[in-house]
Length: 357
Image (tube, rainbow, N blue to C red; front, side, top):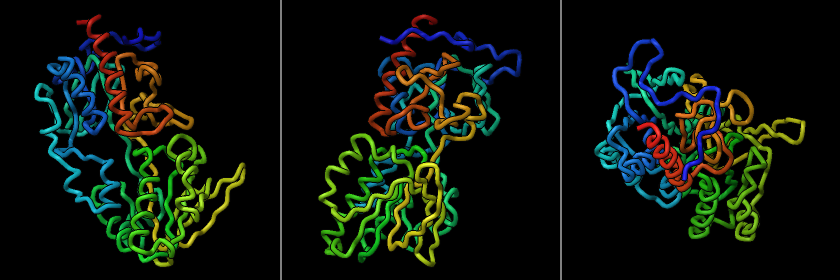
């Protein structure tokens, strides 16, 4: 059973009123922003509940990407095309699909505006915009990704190039990084390391390889995934774990990785040579979330959607909910968790719609 709505200074009741501004061109009882794994889970759960008839989806991409499978592309040679499918096959038929990009959210007047200046009103909003990879935050990375031993499974095309580098690696120093920001994929960084090491063992080059795991935030070494890492270090007994190491620069020609190193209150720089460098890039939600006033304004979760961790309901706008990677809550960001969140949100929407049919 859904929890009752918490008190809020800004808790608009469902309405199609646009606050006296330009009326929206269309409106829906429920508007869903984004159709990645989390958004798609919400749509299917709404459809199963018989609530998809008055739902509008705003999503520009014609393709659905099964991003967790990019680990298999990069470490087992799975074809990248097998991780992509048409969104027509994943969006329930009753849903109205607007194939445009979200440009602005105005929770005060309950509207969303797209990059084509289409304005959609909503009674309830579900934010499933995900998080973006910020390759440019690492100096000299973007133009050199996929060359000079630099790779990542965090991208449709990049994962395929990562497979070529990991498959053909002759041995040497292999560095795997985890950024200071929250990252999607949960255990993906660790899975890449473990599967790469296993492949190199099969290829007879594991004994010529030294493994390094550079973790920017020591908190990433807590939780089931990394506790497992520490328990099974005998599998990779030469694994060197460096905490407080945040990748800030690559020097491709020299095969060097430059890290900002945080130890207590002191910050320094350290340069590590590499033969293979697998990078998990920094990530953050789309800037429009912060601009909308729906995100945390400061702190560790700045830019992430400000929701109650149990109900996933916005703390200041009670008709706004969130699912997926853009949520400002603790815990790993995985597809399994997104499925659970979709059920929580749809239960809350059923409760609210029963009160305001």
